[in-house]
Length: 354
Image 1 (tube, rainbow, N blue to C red):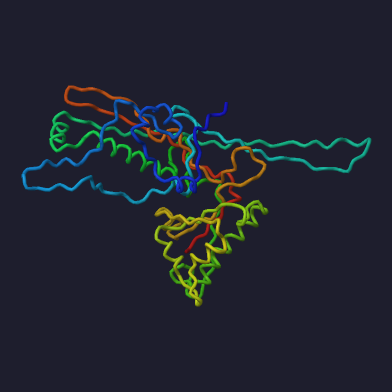
Image 2 (cartoon, rainbow, N blue to C red):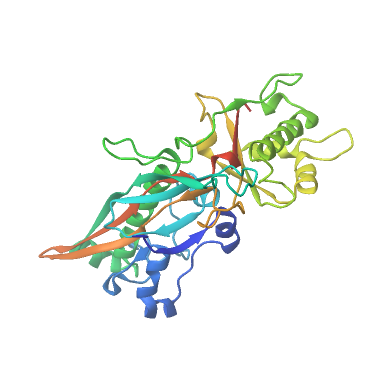
């Protein structure tokens, strides 16, 4: 039985849409939040909060809002997209692949009819479930309320971020656990092997390369993508993603002798290539920095939507329940993850050594 796909976005579409914003009107339609992987309980919604400090002097002026400590960027959504498929309680996600087989023969009235066939394979991915709870004590909540803040909303935000951090990590690296098949953007078994970029006059790394040498690396990757896909991927007709290590966007500013930057050349020569970056690509191949170039969707004979790389998330954030205790309330949240699947490895090239 095919699991329902509640929503599916490529990385490009998620970047264009921007961060998810829920308004007060959205509270009337909690049942529809399942389509984006969010399960909510109406009892768990409260106002935005602040920190736990309480004023001790009347002459203090308090700035509005809350500054939260940040973690490094989490870019798995912009690189692999997000497909909300299946349900939290499911055990596996399965993709059917079909190889069409046939060889036409010369016609003859008395010859045997050559019959076409197909070979079906099934690519399986396991589903992992994580949880993160929060306890709101009566005394600490009452003290936080003295400064007009909501302790509960801050703890819920911390739980949501913790679940999002593990989703991003599983999205890049998968999860190594016996009897499971959960892979990531960097280690899916269907990915093609890395190839080292050509050495320039000053070395292999982009830090030592000129405008012509960096553009040559990108052009070589595009050529390889067109060739290995048998012409299915053409930069003039297909949206593509160039994924760089975090900070390597700066090398797109390398200038030629004629005052043209690598970024200018890329935008003019390959306007359908977007550039993204992620810290996980730093040292990803045994300490060597890497970049990916891949098509986002390919129009072939498949009936699955044409995605090249897909991040499968049955449940991004879901409230499990609330336990009322004598001294406070314990809330528990969960998600369900299946990692990343490379559905069309012929549409991906990986280069190392930059």
